[in-house]
Image 1 (tube, rainbow, N blue to C red):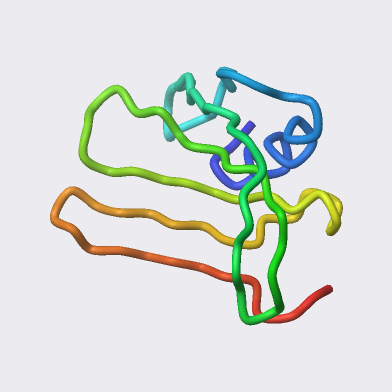
Image 2: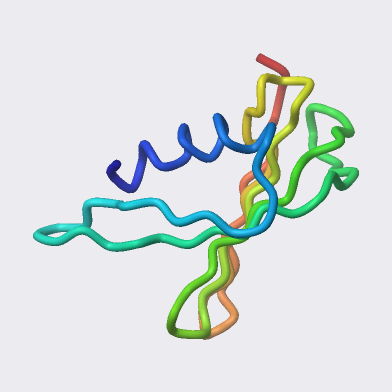
Length: 100
């Protein structure tokens, strides 16, 4: 997998996964092991509406940056919200604007 395609693997696994899973991800000249924790469904508000979505957190070896993605089963496990927080507190948040 590459960094972009790992989202498709998470979408595919979100329906049945629980606990932690590890994905081999190509990163420049090596293969990293990305670990994710699959949580439960949560109600997520977006500009496109409210969705029940499964929370998936990336587990990083070095603390600081957090990445959490919510996948909506009603939309084929499409990510409806992505939240990334950097060690300095800078936040990047993406929310679904309209239904596909």
